[in-house]
Amino acid sequence: MMDKVSVLLVDDHAVVRAGYKAYLSLAEHIGDIYEAESGEKACQLYTDYQPNIVILDMSMPGIGGLETIRRLIMRDANCDILVFSIYDEAVFVERAMKAGAKGYLLKSSSPETLIAAVNKIIHGGQFISPEVIETFRLE
Image (cartoon, rainbow, N blue to C red; front, side, top):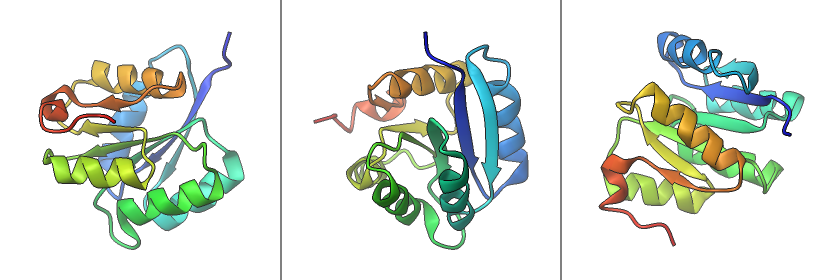
């Protein structure tokens, strides 16, 4: 049996982090939840805590989501990253996945979908929001 999953939430909006944290904390298999308001802070916290999964917004001030993905993957090629974004165009999904993300979730998705995406990724799979899967195919 797997230990509890530790999560690093990365979003520049405190209210978004609070909402995701509140929902994630309801799942029995979720343990520690760390928060970062920027990509720079996320890289630092990842090094400090080595969370099982990073849930990352694509559009943030500073280095932004794509560069954050690249830096996290450079630190740890096995880093599990789930992007969550308002952007539903295939080009954004493709860029995130090519940079090293294992999943892409729309912010408009249900909280249950968030948990399903986390579970799939931490067990070695990939996840893309059903709303964008029609325009993007996993290779």
